[in-house]
Length: 146
Image (cartoon, rainbow, N blue to C red; front, side, top):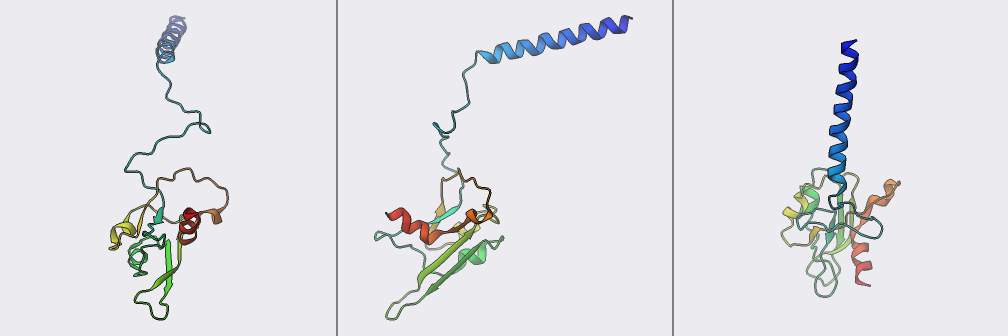
């Protein structure tokens, strides 16, 4: 019988402690954001997916050397380019990023000697389809110019 009352007292004591914590937290400032109307400011070191960096004319700085593709341990980057007649360098024709495989390790950005790719601050990527995470970065660069 003594054990029964001891259990009741311990339960009440636990309830009082829990309600005390709840009461203290109730008057602290809120840390939640109203999501669709407010967004989180990303820190400077945040790593989103990679994007191409344009030059002054809006063309990508990429010279299609393939170092980012070779450095990627996940094999999520595929690039292609062609050398037009009379041109001294290759022109980027396709830069595909499969973000479903990307581990955000940074090897591609570090290996680019021309500073042609960087991380975005884009974090709000949500979809139920895998195809929505296959990015054509050249197409995205052209759309951002408009």
